[in-house]
Image (tube, rainbow, N blue to C red; front, side, top):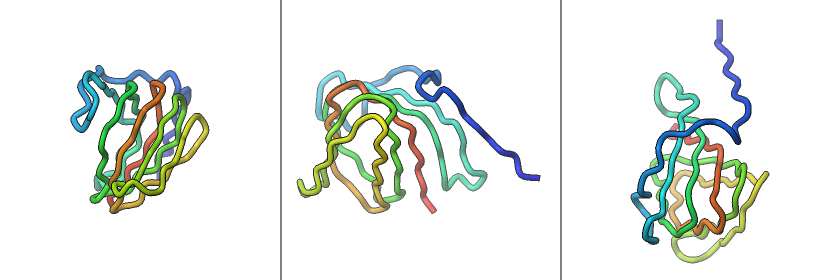
Length: 118
């Protein structure tokens, strides 16, 4: 039998402690997250993430990511400066496997993420 998982109140899901964002380009930017589910083979992970305002680089060369924005606002740009997107609550951002670029968090952000390394 398949075990069905459901998660509610994602805006209120407790997170781990905030820590310095490793790829930040802004002093004192911090992030926190909580893993909700992981596939037995480890190729897919779903969780909730928050980040304080600031600017950071991101690299999705090993796995794609789907981001459903729960709160906050950000700008996301490809590494070559093209494709700028403004995102906010209710938006779904798709970062395909192989993508790299930069995020600028304008307002403290919370998102649901799904990382797919398959």
